[in-house]
Image (cartoon, rainbow, N blue to C red; front, side):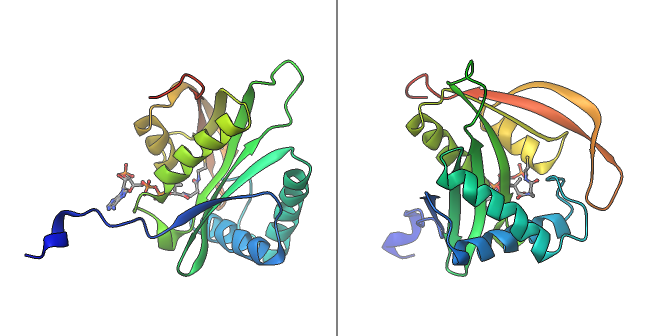
Length: 186
Ligand SMILES: CC(C)(COP(=O)(O)OP(=O)(O)OC[C@H]1O[C@@H](n2cnc3c(N)ncnc32)[C@H](O)[C@@H]1OP(=O)(O)O)[C@@H](O)C(=O)NCCC(=O)NCCS
């Protein structure tokens, strides 16, 4: 047994905040979104999601990021962009301390190795950096993402049945969660 056997391996991905989204990042974001929708994730789009529609969506996000209306995190591994999450910052003037967390996406090739957890922790740090202390999100009831959020300590508010369609059709419920992120060390 070698000396390094008990040293944890460094994560095989890095997280980065994008303040502007270039064409290369756009292509990677399209890949991740198309892959997630092909895999059956209920994230606003129906199958089949063409690259053109996905690109139109990400161009809109890019313009919000450039204008400071959204904050965008991406994860990259050796093969390129493999995950992302966003904070929506342009909320009504009576909610300056809050952000909505959305479009948390991990490419199927990069799942189940801690990237989802890392993106969520990164999003919390990003929220603090943006002066936001309360985060809200919704996720398919009892899905992989809802399990992740509950595991990370997000508070489950409640379920709304028949909220949206799965990308292949069929109704799914959504569960709302919130998390306070400004309360100092956890
Ligand atoms: C939900 C989602 C983001 C999770 O991403 P992920 O990178 O797989 O998340 P993690 O790796 O942190 O955790 C997922 C599972 O892998 C496990 N895991 C983490 N690291 C692991 C490792 N090194 N070895 C084995 N398992 C591991 C976790 O314990 C967790 O297990 P569980 O699902 O049985 O509870 C991903 O499934 C996804 O993108 N889904 C489609 C899009 C979607 O639904 N987004 C949410 C919108 S609200």
